[in-house]
Length: 607
Ligand code: M6R
Image 1 (cartoon, helix red, strand yellow):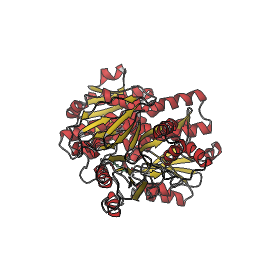
Image 2 (cartoon, helix red, strand yellow):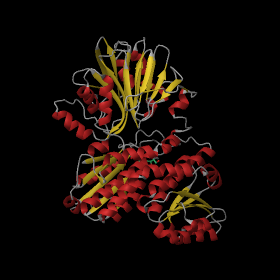
Image 3 (cartoon, helix red, strand yellow):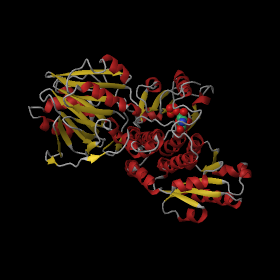
Image 4 (tube, protein in one colour):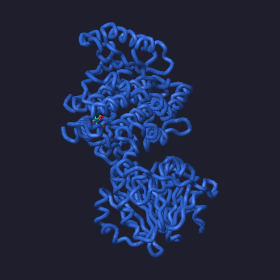
């Protein structure tokens, strides 16, 4: 996600802002900028690319005088990572500048309304609507303008605002996006992340949703959403800068696992309106969808496994045949692809060489391509006919976690959207599935909360080669669970369709062989249970993964990991979470370099 910082005091603001932005670099970003109040005007400097470029452009801040300002690192979501789309954004009258962390879900309708009212836009961002709303509502009372603006915004936001009429003041607002105020002596700060504050002050005020505040060098005043002044406690941060970067977690991977409820919410929220799924700025009509004879999903690694899960959702809901192909194979397969083929290309980075090659191969044969991508402006995003961004935010750990679950989420949304357009679902079922999807973030959180025993299970099961088994959607989860285990713990792990065991693999089952059995598909429960009985009869110890309340599984498996009950087609999004944690604790127990496993790169840009 993006990062925001602010400073007001007696010193030059720009160097403090640049230093704060550098502290946020670890989160990943693609452009950066600052806005400083000086002599009744706002000076904005912003660049696409690294903060070092911004430092160079501003003489490390010395060329931007002024003692109050705001700064931003941007991770592109709406619009490519260009200079124009970088924050801060200025109002047309030059009176306000804004930085924003989060997503404004209703920005398209606000943008239309503001253009109708005569405002001109310099960027493609959702954020720019905010600064024009401030200008629109401002009549000399900033507090009122901020409150009226916030009331119009749907989505998540932590905002930093400056106004030329109050030359030493900063304004901040928070809704569903982190925001912390730093309390100094004769100077005050704000930031989206405590990392940017701890080298200046350890005294902080945590802002809550719906609150806004005014900061001057000598005072901080916090208000609730009705404008009533609040007395907020000052807390003391004890973290070092290093610990603060990881939000207190020992590894980025664990932090990113824990971020999944928020990441999945970010993928869902902008696309569900009035109980209906919408795509981002494009539509597929029933007629266009009926013209599609098959869908090919292509990707590598975990993104490919997300496709394996997504296939079940699309086929079941839309009744369109889906093939899931490894991009490294598809590119050389002389694929049977034509203008009646829709290709879904999945990639977190958007830069995976094999995936790009497979995309080009399919496009050259006439296929329509939808990219399911996390990194805005990446090669795959640019080459695709349409893009559905996953909005996972930057993923730092090499092993993908929130990247994968947000890919699943987008595939579920696509399946529901297409099924609705094709008229292949009755209205009640459609509405029930949309509701179920909206509960996903909460269910992921419950899954995390109910699995406190995973460190102990990891030490019991992850000490030698492991088998992961499952059927159908559970098999797709087993594939991803085994990959996670392999790549970070360096233990040999294999996944098998449970029904395949007896065709050869069962010969490998010996006394004490760990088997992880994924059993979240109720209609196939008895089938997988019989596979559990088979491997147990040969001495295996079985750790099963199933939904809460499944008594049958308790009587058969040695240990059970539970997830909340959920529609089978969406179960992968929950079931994978304990498997990510199992791999994490296994790797931790074995002393592995969890965030940077050996021989692996985050983005595989060569063949
Ligand atoms: O950036 P992409 O999603 O295209 O990357 C694809 C794979 O390289 C990636 O999923 C890889 O398998 C991960 N390390 C798995 O955790």
